[in-house]
Length: 118
Ligand SMILES: [Mg+2]
Image 1 (cartoon, rainbow, N blue to C red):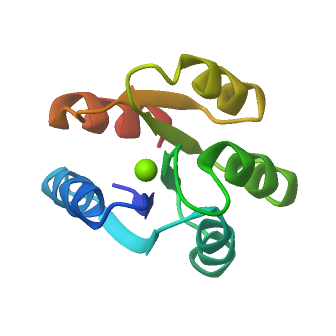
Image 2 (image 1 turned 60 degrees about the horizontal axis):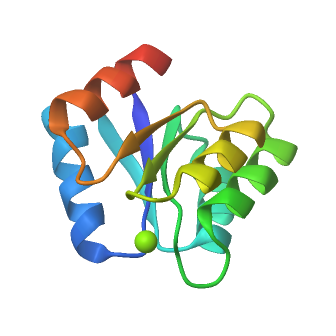
């Protein structure tokens, strides 16, 4: 089971993700609401996997992936994207993100992706 860092600017979305992660038997080791927070929290908790939102105020998820990967090349980051964000998902994958799930997040799909990358 994995130690997961959840990044999303929407508190409701973080709650949904937290619930799924916990129901899957994983541990939530941190939460962040934007890219800057994601980077600093990543360094503190060194999670097994990050779930990363794309659109956030301040630094977005794609730039956060670039910066986390540049400091921690083995970081495993899963993008949580909305419809119509295909270009940004591709940018994130090019920057080193490992996978993506599409919102609305389906529990089974997210858990499957987490297990695949643990
Ligand atoms: Mg967002």
